[in-house]
Image 1 (spheres, rainbow, N blue to C red):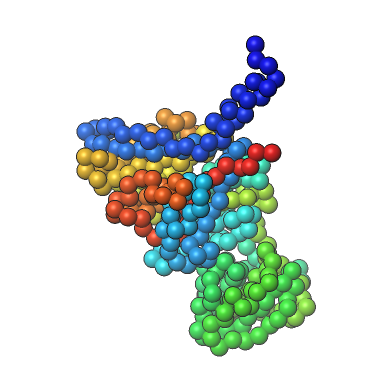
Image 2 (cartoon, one colour; image 1 turned 120 degrees about the horizontal axis):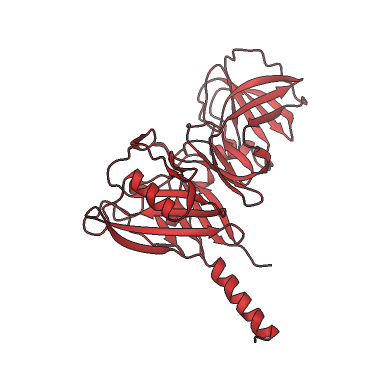
Length: 349
């Protein structure tokens, strides 16, 4: 029979095993094609998840290894456009960064560690003197007839080289209203601001907007997913597994046809609330050809996923462990991405 000291040593060893950030790697044959699969299954009680944007702003490209830090595992994340802007709703550390939905599942990590994959609905307004005003987008850019809202995440400038009106809002109170004739340097305007502070820009609004310095002006967020309890959230590329069933489509808007063998990255949730990242290398004959979307869904179900979705894949498919490339990217080197996910152990208390 173990003594107290020995029992504590065993318990501590078990905890270290549970909290270890490991990747399983397996090579096998599917229908005559070789596949190399990497899987990480994370217990949210012991693992911390951090999202990172290239250069900590809305536009640009950095590789997953360039954004990585010691003692963590990193993966490529959201889809993005040709100037490095992530596609879809994005919530980082409880702050809404982007609100434009791309009509795909939203992956959510709540403050209590609960994982969800949902169909999101989200609206935003500005409220002034008990009137709701429709906004265009958050950190997306300009339109000439609606309000555009910017935060420090947008980048160094508001990218508007024409006449427009600017309203600075600190602590939900208008601090300044002025007209600009060229791009505003956000890094200067937002110096010393807090989370929740923002800038409003517009031209030729389709409604009156009688705002003055000192007025109360709030940015209102309405969702179908209790935004207030969300710690991290990001939109994916489409369903792979839903309620335990393979629901992979032959085509997705941000992926195209999913029936060819390609490198792929995916994220899923198990019944026990564990987070699963599954990566498959591809475009490497004889080593790993890749998988179809439907094959990837079957692999996620085999690992216990009840819900799962695509992350960006193809040449973006990357795993970094302890700042070193862990998989075999199809280009032979890592590709610059706009968004990445990193996992590391929580400190034991």
